[in-house]
Image (tube, each protein chain N blue to C red):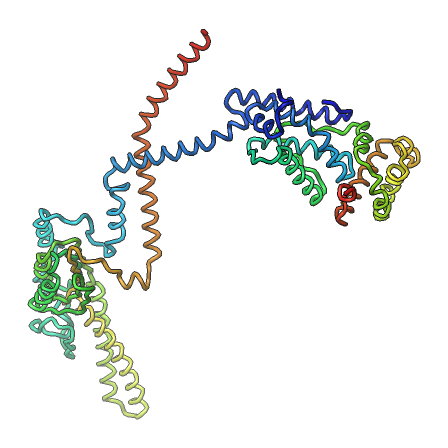
Length: 194
Length: 367
């Protein structure tokens, strides 16, 4: 039954039956994660923003009114708000998850590559190479190895002579910083793609 | 969920858990979506309850609430002279007011007419005019009755329509026949006005009574201020100064040098100035004691109420604040009274509702 409902109908139904919201999540979670990954270039940030967006949407689903637009547009409105706050403050809010009692979750190591795979770096590789020059040396080297040369994380860690977790962290921070730089320059992966 | 990203799978489980918890709350009637819809209903119910309480309180609470509010506000602001303002005296109460006026303050007006005319420098037979100048060397009235009472009053009368002009003339006539005068007067259109009268203290009560009979008294007050102590002090001071003056005068007459004469002349001048000042104060007191001030306000029944120019030019924020506070307190008191009446009804309704719910639950359990 839930598969036949539109997104707007799912949202309205979830106001009386909260379980319907999970169906909405199943439909759009990966797309939303890709949306954030392409804009932040950072798997950790993308994952947290996805979680916070769905938490916020669940908490405020009672306010949803069907105005004729697609229900997912309401969801992406919340997502844009979260993204804007992230770029303004440089950090990700946890208020909605805290309110709902959702525990903090670490991003599993194997998910880093999977989320990066959601982002096709090819179109912005050249812009990235230019922006790399402005990064700290450790992050620049990590990104150079991982993004530009496309080496797997174990090899990146070996070349940087650090643990794999540390290598992932440097790449993640470097990507986050790159995303800020691209944002400042008015560039994002989505815009470059278009 | 079909994904190979573990984080998303974990997030799905977290959301399912949160949804299940919300479902439990929802079933108990405290769900997220439904709770929000209850709020407006509760707010409306509370507002309706307060309105009903206010209406009930107004009905049962005479003198406050809707029915009493305009009158109460009028009372709060109408009488600023500290007089006996209150409900408009009905005709049956006029004889009582008359009796009150006659008994009034416990002053013997005749005795104080003598005292009022007994200034430091005037004879007892002279009319109680304020302009009597002191005769030098006259003995001080020490040992005589020196009670000095300044009496003032105000009265506000409602007149039948069309009577304002005639009544105004009658008030002037009463003042003149009492040996007094009209100090100032004002009119507002053809139906309202006021007069300030100066009436000899001995005639004050009679004039007050006569004027009160010209219309329906809306408010009246009299007050007396005892200035005896001030009068005695001034007289004592005056005596000392006169003694000093005589002393300097004798020295001046016996002065042998020009410089002595000049010095003594200067001191005489200073003392004389002091004497003049105190005599002026004594004359003022005597004038106030001798002539009482009576403010009369006349208004026809249907005359339009004009704004007091004083209120327009100098609106009293203090008075406005007082009225505002009184209004707020009256409304709160009215709501409280209403809630008091509603409380037993609420208790009974609660008991009945509780019994009904118990019976329903038992039926549901049985089925």
